[in-house]
Length: 223
Length: 248
Image (cartoon, rainbow over all chains, first blue to last red; front, side):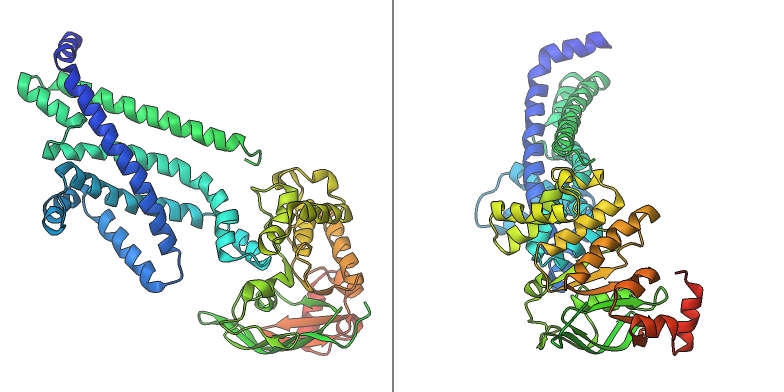
């Protein structure tokens, strides 16, 4: 087995490396824009307007209640038809992944904020602090500790969900497997190389998240 | 304990319900500048809700609250500026765990009164000295005992230079040996002329420091008067019952 894997890697290594870059590209964009969009959605959800709250609730309801693959199909077929400018297949898929990720990020951040003791908000407001100052100076700094670990898990999910792009033959790790498999008709060893690449990426990411969390803990001695 | 006749808060016919549960069933009361008022009563009687309505942490369903003659329950009333004048201390301290002791005190004057750091820290240090916490200046609150946390919470509120202080069961969450250090700070403050309302189960304290005692039950003020009146000669059956059940 190891020999087969080695020889596949020798011949098709570049396919896997290209695939890895593809996955990293998709995942980084999804993580960055998914987090930004999700954070914005959280603030809208926490606003006082009942209408806005319900819009976000419905958004999250739909995106968490339907498969990511279905959402990708939707963006793949729907978006290019109705926008005035050209959009690549890959861009459509990344957009779908970003929108999908934002719903999960919104839930993670909101849960993290809501887990902060209500007494903290009450104390801040009783001092005459404005809602904005209360959120950014009192609640958020405490919520970060709840949010980061859960957000790390979401990031790992995002890396793995990039594999859905393989259905549309966008270059990434699972597509690399498909390419090699159809060229060589060797399945399991080809699959294992893709699997190892995913493990490498997700392990690197979780180590990075651990480092960030540790840093955060060291910066305050409160535990 | 001397106070003039300047009324500072006038509450009229306050009602508040949580769902189908009526917590305040028409509370009226006038508080004068410099007065020290203890609020006693069984748990669930509405005394905390009454206190929380005074700085609008709870919005009353109906009734009026006048602060120095100004109605504060209106939707457009500048609530943050109002709360700066009403300090509040909670049962569970609610100190900010992510900020050092000194920053717990300075954060609100710096943010909301635009006080510069130096001036704010100077003031905070004076306050810490006053309650014997100066040596904890740069600690995080997790390093403090319950009594120390509550003293910190008190000076944090004082940093906004409030005109009224509200204490919501300030010693109920404390270990017994820490109750006195907190009550001493409150007494000192009260004797210094601060208008003070305390919801408390410490009857000895209520007897000692208050000008007036309110007994609240079922969302109404059932009895009020000097500590002597209320504790030694309660008129209502309910108040007598209650006082018979609690220890002094």
